[in-house]
Image 1: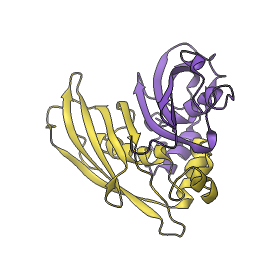
Image 2: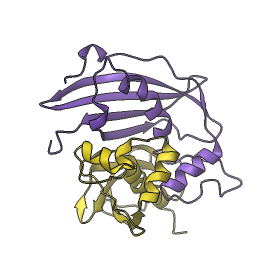
Image 3: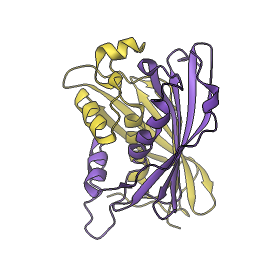
Image 4: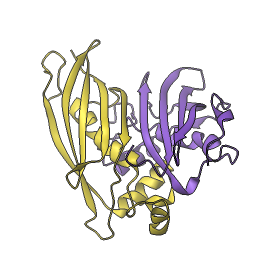
Length: 142
Length: 143
């Protein structure tokens, strides 16, 4: 089923602030096998470069789970991900995410959804933009 | 800890040390909890098969997160990566059992950029096959 083209360009309101905890960073780092980012007692607890996904994937559910978009969740795959950082995420940050639907489309049986998620502090400082491409199965050889 | 690379000393073509990382179902459960990505194709055989996959698969972002470790550890300090990305082209099927499977990550300095930054091109293999397309990162080094 083709995606609803009316979603292209849609911008969702900023999410409720997310406070980045040092133990959340540690938990995420452990899950990808990183050395303990909280090990240096003098340094800031810096999140790994892919940590933003914790916030952005959750924010993207506003679009992904909207039945009017028409995405088949049972065949949903993450196809591509990019992060562009202005500065790293550190423990104590209070961050909100603004999701924009960059593109809806696809070819043949496969639907493609591209979302950009701007991560900013509650003070308006840009931290990171995450760009995700989601597809539904059927274009594995594309 | 190995020496921290300096921008002035780094050359295009320099290789990063290879990283081999085990992935077991235990790791998928842990990553699901840590990341909040509870898509059932990463923990339910029937959901994975229903999605047309050959078995239970690792999160693309787990594989990519592991790959980025290589860059982070080579750079020697956290928070130096200003950009990174990858396309998830082949599934990493994770069998049941303690041994699981593994991914192998290699990296090379592909380009020296202004601002003491370098572009690292990664290669991420599972069972000898590349599982990510164009996995790349830009990382800032000391002069």
